[in-house]
Length: 149
Image (cartoon, rainbow, N blue to C red; front, side, top):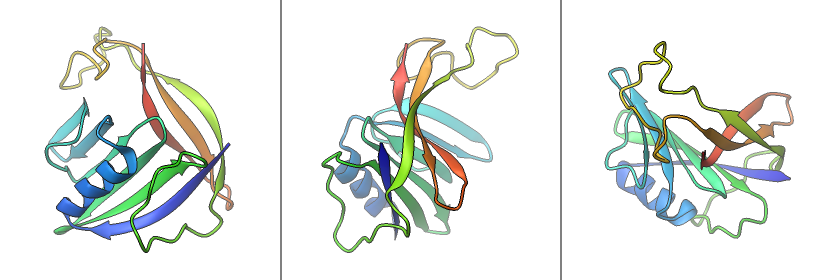
């Protein structure tokens, strides 16, 4: 399995169009700023300072820089998803990847105190489907793909 990677920069409206165009409408997402952590399903209503939207085929990660956003687009090779014009893959892309499953901390555990009592799939426990992606220089990143019970 391989994952392609691209870099993108633009404004909030452009980031919304990018996510919708690359991942579609059925996405999960997380976002955070110094005072907030949100994990939800569906298109983000607003974009916090850092976050990511993800679907079964890929992920778009963002970070706010003033009134602009920088984004990393990660798509499974062969996903068939369309990219905006003018984007070139990052050097060395596609990168090798492996499918993995990450257990979520049960929200019923009293040591856990997030600002929500259920994960976006409606349960207080579960797992994340993800890709372990290895960059040619050796570092590894975890790219989310969805929630499961």
